[in-house]
Amino acid sequence: MAEKIRLGASYRKVYAASAISNLGDGVAQIGYPWLASAVTRNPLLVAAVVVAQRLPWLLFTLPAGVITDRVDRRKAIIAMDVLRAVLTLAVALAVLGLGDGLPSPDDLASVEGTRTGLYLVVVLASLLLGCAEVLRDNSAQTILPAIVPSEHLERANGRMWSAEQVANAFIGPPLGSLLLAVSFVLPFVLDAASFAVAAALMFLVTGQFRSRPAAVEGSPPEPATSWTTDLKEGVRWLWHHPLLRTLAIVLGVLNAIGSMQIGILVLFAQEVLDTSPLQFALLTTGAALGAVIGGYVSAPIKTRLGSGPTLWLTLIVGVIVPVIAGATSTWWVVSLVFFFFSLFSVTWNVITVSLRQTIIPDHLLGRVNSVYRFFGWGMMPIGTALGGLLVVVSEPIWDRETALRVPWFASAAIGVAIAVYAIPRLTTERMDAARAAAMAETGAPAVEVDPV
Image (cartoon, rainbow, N blue to C red):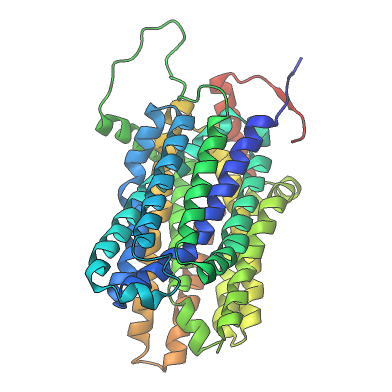
């Protein structure tokens, strides 16, 4: 008889911790750029803060996977949230120490003797916060299979993605702007508080969440291995799994062509779509709304169409969207196609994340997951640079407006190529077979799940 498991408390705590920490991240999206622009007006130095935030995804993702498989994943999440709370509070205190909350960027920029020191604090904090985010996110993805049965992962992931998008894209940025209008320091105080609350919620989750060893029960423990050996094992496992290898390659290319579009979006919106600041905000809100809805409809779409056709639909939409966006001069048309692009992008993420959580052995989940994410995130700066390069190269050949349209059509062409490569390899049958093989290898029993 199937074992009946009631879900509820543990998942709700993880869900709430994720949503609250993402609320702080949304507030920080406003706070840190304003702080950087107040400290310095040098565009390169302001950009360096963003680089410091993203650099850990390229440099620290693989080591974070090894750490995730060596420690209790719940404790890793708590430690990283506590670290982020302390770092953000330190930034808040540094800003507050310069004078009564600093309500105006001009007030901060006028304090010559402290600008360099505060800038270094911001860059260092951004770098460390990025490292903590990498380890925290990888641990959060690998802890969910220990809380949610495999057949319920898509629903659980979808709801969590939607909550994160609402907090990060809809509530956080406007709240950050409101707090800035009251006091320069308040966004950082709220950000620190959100991390502290998230850590407290994860502390209330009970149980041990270390990776389960692959050794047969009763056999002697395996000798300790080096970090290099552990990392190679994760890379080798992913590369020798045909389905996950294909997904990792396709994800890297999709993120690269998406970054080609996003990298020149501001210039495209200003010079081709002729948007006002409000219209630009509405343009990007279309993408956020699509992501929120995608988190809730991904499981029903996959149930109706099957895993393979749902991923194919995402690939097809990924070709159609840049063609329409690159051909139009109307901002609301771009916002509308962004809605569908984000909806199916989240659907792709929910299906593939749940698949990874199901088929990767638990003792390798942290490492293989980090290698997979390294492929995905590592291609984004390359795509961004390629999009800008295409504009620079195209402008002397055509006019400026045409040059700004070129990355959209180029990404659509690459999208056609990757769809031709991926569609025969990403079938429902192959994904179902991979799940069945993983279940057979672990000997997992049938599980009856109550609705959350």
